[in-house]
Image 1: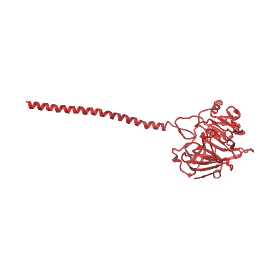
Image 2: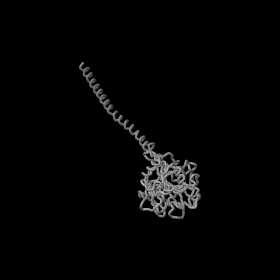
Image 3: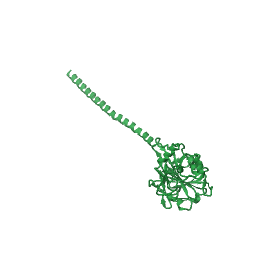
Length: 360
């Protein structure tokens, strides 16, 4: 009987030990599940981060319409097109380093004028402002830009008087919206501030928001642009006068071109910043003289031959007027530009072979 009792007690002791061990195992198991749950939550948080990163780099970004540069905030400001004096006595100019696009056109006497287009930003000071020509007004109309000039040719005056484009002119606002600098002589000293351009838009009851988006196309990567003939030094000549020959040099580190005229680097007078552009376009367009003064008619509608410089290369393309915009075209579609600022030369037909040279 005692032996049976000892056996029963021994069995109960073993059973209790087993139950105790199982209980400890369950506690350990319960404690091990908590880290699993924490890891699961961390995985879920980590999985959400790429979506936020994708949003911050993708759908939340706005592509500037004239430069293709991605920005965090949308900018619906209407473009402003200003006629800027390019006479040697008017240099260096103010505001041109901040222009999205600079168009360079011939005026009279083989001299050129600049049409600076501002949309991404509006400079504190722009100028010297010079007089309008009818093809400048037509360009502003195509761009749906608020047009700024000081003075006008007879044909341009008719267009402006009929409010063909919304505009402000220094002939009506000299000394008020337009200011004369004391360091230069007229007609090389008329300036307008960015604030006064905004005031002019309000005074003339002009639209202040962009209405037309240009048919420009942009590369996703600078590497995609490096297809063509190597061209790191470029000369564009409007005449034999060295004051109207632009020399561009390519900087591979910034992927932009500096501009120099007659040995002088093009610097913005208002901020001392050099002009640095990502694209240079040379477009051929028909030119003809229309009066004894030498004023021109320039066809900015019909399109023609063009050459595009970007990323240190040169590429022959064409240009077309697409909904008012002078657009480079390759294989029937808008040619890709490198995101950034662009300088556009409009030269007489058959001028590329005579007026443009480039070297590696």
